[in-house]
Image (cartoon, rainbow, N blue to C red; front, side):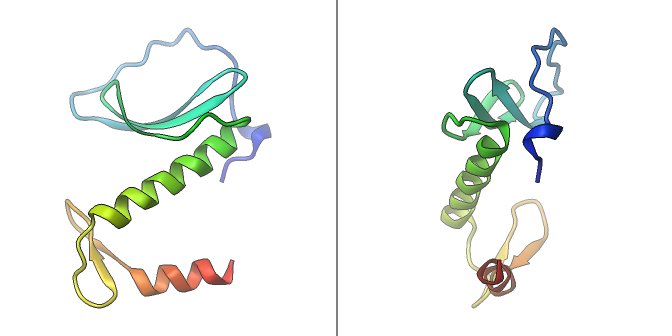
Length: 100
């Protein structure tokens, strides 16, 4: 997790370049921040505007989790497939979240 003190928030003149189909996670803004999962230069999933970059990342993470819950098919009672390979154990993740 990024702390607000470890994030870079100054304006940048560095051009954003991507390869076709490249996925990136970015945080942008100045007084209000939005985090986004970008496909090429197009935002595919965005957070709401937030007061800090860290909060924007948290909101983006929550949004991504909701998207995953809606679109990842069940493989059995407790495992879900991840498109492109791999899977995660739903029961294990839920138990970990309950502890925290």
